[in-house]
Length: 430
Ligand code: PMP
Image (cartoon, rainbow, N blue to C red; front, side):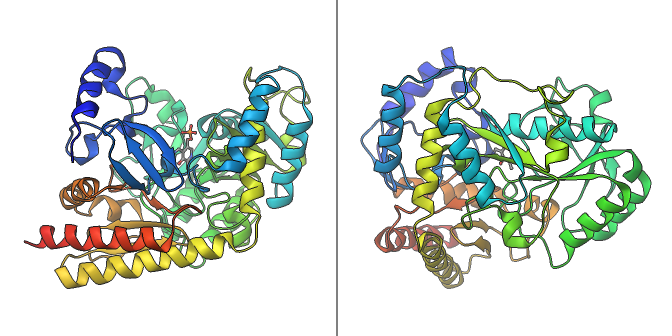
């Protein structure tokens, strides 16, 4: 496959854009470096790069593109929004319609507020939790990504339940000291941390189904423990559903799992591919937000009609009967085919899948937490990633990311993908 134009573009981009990319995960650093393929056009399940190569896409822009690229219903909504003027700085009818749609789909949210990204949504839920409780410490799980605001760019320290250390330059140690990081799916570590810090904790931040060290579901009983202890200490629960909302069914993972958190952060899918974030939760907590209450949050672009109308159109597509059943069916075919191909080639893999999202880990050990995901074979993944790319299959360039199916993928796409997987595994096995 020829990547001449991607290479030229990358050299030029390096001169003008930091690292040649506008988000570090787009670089190929996690798969050994090199030139990230630059895309020119996308339609349905396919990407077309600047050299004219076609790929079946499983990146889905890191999650938002669940209806496939350039879905006609969403494209029409965006065109209409553009024709009607893209930004008003006033209330609109669309944002009320959309707030009602979200509330109906995720009943735990009495009130919502729109922002522009998942980062903003999570950052604000933390501020609101701190304002409401009058406490400053927060708790999160190791390996979970919650955007790039200071407080959540904090990694675990050395013990199983420790105060954090900054995960990025520019995050002051004083901020990291406000964050307690514990392993996912470890009720004992959680209880120990709650006994120690529970009364000082404003909130516990949770990806209810993890998407950021691959797809990892909570073990039986884990979320019960999380909620019970949080309630005991008056700590608010915040579900970061930036990846999970509308990914597995029409609603939040919280509905699927049977829990109602105090606050929820949303993003990605709810913008139909345009920039968006939203947060919401219990009325008495949300009423601490300005202009009603003392917790400040604002945004020039917040609730812009283009993102809102794209989001409404996206949810209209997802509300059609059978959407998630089909994503599940295709996900099952993909999972079975990959497992068979790996067994035939003698490649040790583990797949974590929920409906149309899955992660292929190069390990024969079950992956339930970040430590186990970290221990999987990154070098083998990097080789697999490149072998797939060369055969026209675009995956996320990191062993920690998921493959996302869209409503545009077909059974034919799955069989083409599986042929490429078999070929790649054969080469890896040689
Ligand atoms: N939370 C989660 C769970 C995420 O996966 C992400 C982005 N990958 C974010 C928050 C941040 O969202 P954004 O990139 O839109 O700021």
